[in-house]
Length: 63
Length: 250
Length: 222
Image 1: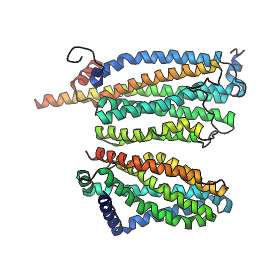
Image 2: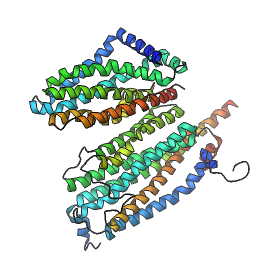
Image 3: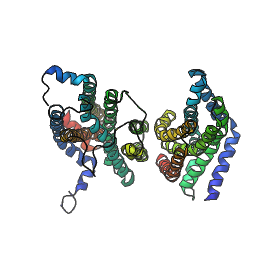
Image 4: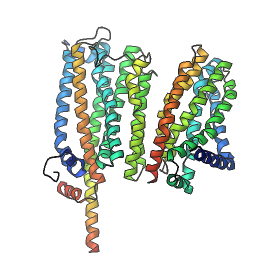
């Protein structure tokens, strides 16, 4: 499919708003999911590290 | 390894053994997803021709249909694994089901959103309350209900099992979505791709759609594997191996 | 088995009779909600006539949903539910009894009062008849599906809204065909298909819902 020029590609035969609106939102949603997953993993590791440290301190003071 | 020393897939049914497997597989699926989506988008924008009736607006199909397929497929997989967890009492199955839900919900949203943006230029309206769109909307509510129910119940085993019952009750919605265009005369177009007959769309369009569907599938697997690793860490935090794992990370 | 259902019915109706207020409240809610729409949308007769099936059916959904809080929770609180789980009778039978009593107290009154409210919306006679029949077939389905939702959220914090979130999407097909049957009658195309589908939903719900509710109750109580 030869678009001829960038303008034609972006305009999508007049439907640019709809086509790019779809692709943009999809990209945003998927990227947001990936970011959320990375954040979640980091948060879990951080929280669990604190939890284990607290548990260790607790065991030490009890011993 | 099983006691006799022979390899058994059941080895991976414990969270402890599945965790490293998921970690090892996840980058591969992510890479596959990226490659397939890149190829699919190239085909979609630079190989597939302009549609005679819809012009360029039809190119939304390369996201809309794969996302809709994923939304239904992921719900079935989620229902399957939560059912396995309900019947066999396996923790990992329920964890995987919990991990699938957000990705499934997001694809349902994408299907609805792209569908609306495709409907406006094609049918003249953003939304219509026909059978397929309504049942896809209900699917979104079912995903959200599943996640809300599990979040509301504090006891983990009860949350898993209750979610499983809900997911299984909602499974009946999937055939309704799929067959709705056959059972009712609706605004949404009928099936262009079926197992029984030749597809009614151009070969390059079909190819682009299938490649994107595969790409989304690989993405779903990668996202689910990543999420289930987080779920495993959270739920198994009382075990020694998780303590060792976290110790190794920090 | 019939005796077990009879026992559950008698107990529930007796308890409801002692707290008549609860049952009447749900009915009054239905009437008030239905009356709100003409006030909000404007009293233009044609518009009201078109809206009527949908409004009445949505109000029925909401009234059923509100009364779900009384289905299992009181028994759970006073320990009767545990006894039901331990009883020799199959839990499915007891659940069926509870669903029937729920319908008698929340669904059936709606069926009886709907013609009056339909007159408020200037629905023609045949449409009123179809409305009652559709509610008669549909409200038991609502009670059956609602029982599954109530059982899943038993004792969970925030369960009121959560039940709505779980159960309303499952109510949607019943709403579509119930309201659609009245709309089809008003339009002259005949309500047979809609009512038959509603009957199909009822048959499906009768088979699956008590079983799912019983499973959910066991999960909630273990």
